[in-house]
Image (tube, rainbow, N blue to C red; front, side, top):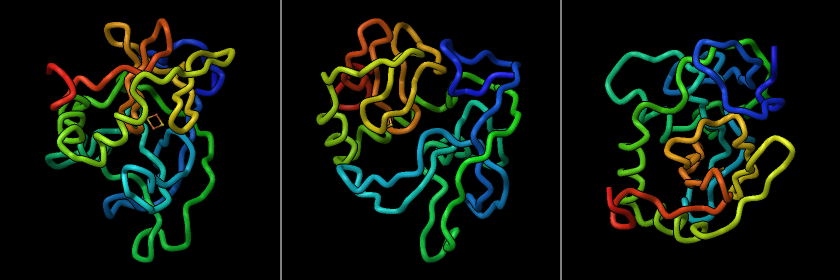
Length: 184
Ligand code: FES
């Protein structure tokens, strides 16, 4: 079974992979969560100073309650004085099935982000930049997250962490399609 960081093509729904996971509390639920990308904070532009991981929507089981997928995207697994106060552990690779290729509410997430000036700052900063490649595929220029295992849609890979849209052929960061920036 392949680790996600060994893939040179995007994941397939219904297949098992070794996925980075962390055991932590998220939205009041202490569990093992699939995560994507490094632990980081987003003080710059996004003004979010708490160290956190993002949940990988491809491998998480759908939770109960309205707005679950918005929370997956907008509410990371964070450490603060009140939540996961002892800090967040390093990821552990665990076997998980791929349940979907992306967050089902990605368009809604993008619309909400585009209405916020912090996100406009983020999109303005990165639009037009060139992503680098490694032997697997494109790397998101924002947090150096490999996008090789992410499926393009209509020739575009949308980074699930902070929504940069990368042209899958050229690696150029495209403008957002949401809100005042785009046509959607
Ligand atoms: S890691 Fe932030 S947009 Fe990709």
